[in-house]
Length: 197
Image (cartoon, rainbow, N blue to C red; front, side):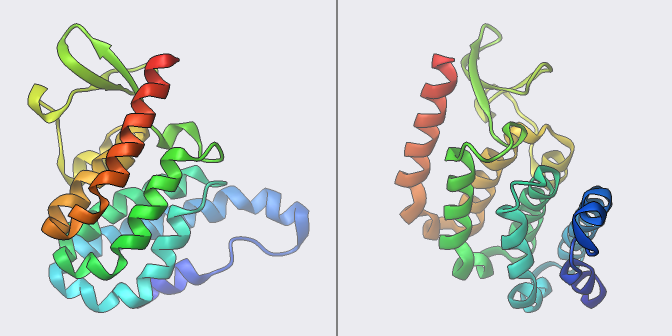
């Protein structure tokens, strides 16, 4: 875990604008891979991952707000799901900031469209489904959906944040109650905007 934290701590690029442009994709890929490895470690060690949270949280936060490299942001959302599964209610001290960042990502025009959902009604399920770009759509649990951390990483980017709200709610239990109104408002706004489009 210490080695992964060192990789995440490495600067993304050095050597000026030309080197930054040439190496940005490679650096993002390295950070994305390191973030995925952290998710695997979290799932592997379970609650013991809690001892790494103070050291890892700055990188989790940086990944969630990294809108320029949306693949890293998306991967970080998936890793957040793994961390939820691993540490359980030990995530509570970080809850306010994490939920705030996820709500910000849903509402921001600066966040890449692949991270945010689009909604539409479909005849196969009377409830609204999440549209996953040109491909299939995701049905709510009542209509039969896939779930879990592995499903999140394998699923389309557009369902990631919404799935993570569910994971946070399950992880924090009654501690999630204070976020319900804010999350509900954001989901309603996202639904109205998507249906209007």
